[in-house]
Length: 195
Image (tube, rainbow, N blue to C red):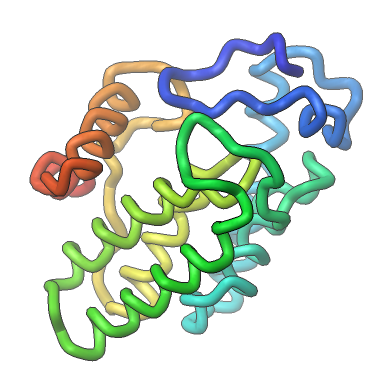
C-alpha cells in the first residue's frame, strides 16, 4: 500500500495505516480508487435520503468520513494519530475542528460573508486541519457541498468539473488555489470552484 503512486499533493498513507485496509485483495492504486469510489457513492445515496442539516460538528464530520470509507478502511471516521505533510499536530484536530464549526456558524448568523465565501473559507480550513489519515480532500469537498446545499440553500460547487482525486491539470490548479488561500488569497479558489 505505501508503495502506491499518489496524485500530486496527496498525503501518503503511513505503513501502519495501510495495514488497516479491509480489502486485502487490492494491489493497485486503481483498484483502491475504484473501491473507495463505490463506497463514496453509497455515502452520497445516504446523504440524498437524509438531507442532513446538523453538519457543523465533530460527530457529523466523522460520520460522513466513516460512510465514505468504512467498506475500505478500518480507520474510517477516526481522526489521524500521526502528523502529516499538511495539517497541525494530530492531537489538536478536535479543537481545531470545533473552532472551525463555531466560526462558520457565526459567519452565517452574522451574515459576515456571502454563501460562496463562507463555503470557500470552510473548505480551505477543513483541508488544512486534515483530520483523517486519507480522503481529506474528497471529504472536505463533500462537506462543503453539504454546507452550500443543506444550510446555505445555495448550489454546490463544480470543483473545476474534473476528477480532483486523480493527477492532472485540474488537480494541479486546485492545489495551487489552496496554497494561495494559505496566504489569505481566496480569489483563485473562488474562481476555481465555480468553473
